[in-house]
Image (tube, rainbow, N blue to C red; front, top):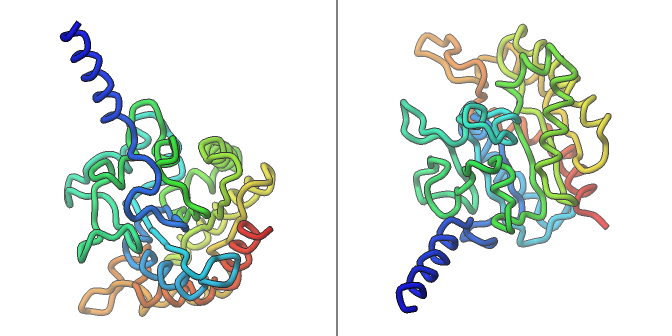
Length: 279
């Protein structure tokens, strides 16, 4: 009997260890922002600063906390797939940098914002039976009052070429999002090159139409507007440059450019948040 009791206790302990950390893990934010590498290259800190200024307005409480997770080349498919290959951008260790995400706000890790998803109590989003998004919300692991998805870059070709693919991705995303979870989906900031901007504009049109078709749960905020395109397209000062002045990274606006982008988008984000969090 004693051996059986010990075995049973070991089984229960193993089950507990395999369960996600329960909600209200240290740093679990009221506002959770998820997205791709634009967050890690400047937009993450800009989002934290923006929502700090919006506290007490736009449906936000005066003490609302903000957490940001930007995962390298992730797409909406990366967050909603259970397949190892598709969600590899989120769950695999980056071969060059050994970490794959930048985190900001209440999720920051001291002076170093870079983490590996799957390591540490706050980032257990990878399991064989669930997508990263499902794992994030499973059993109350994270319980934000508002989640904001901010991405597009690596899904550009897929969405620009196929409205049906955009619709499929949106439906998969909403299927993994907890019912009733307030949500904003926002496409990322315009890049430097005109050709890239035009292709991303088409992708945005298709994914916006997909959200309009399924309706309901999420508010859509377009990152590509006449003002944001005019601010970034062809403006070398908004992107990282070589010593010669030539743009070396045309896809990730600098931190200063990200703050300008947030200023231009402030009213749209405020309106979407108020719509999601209001009575």
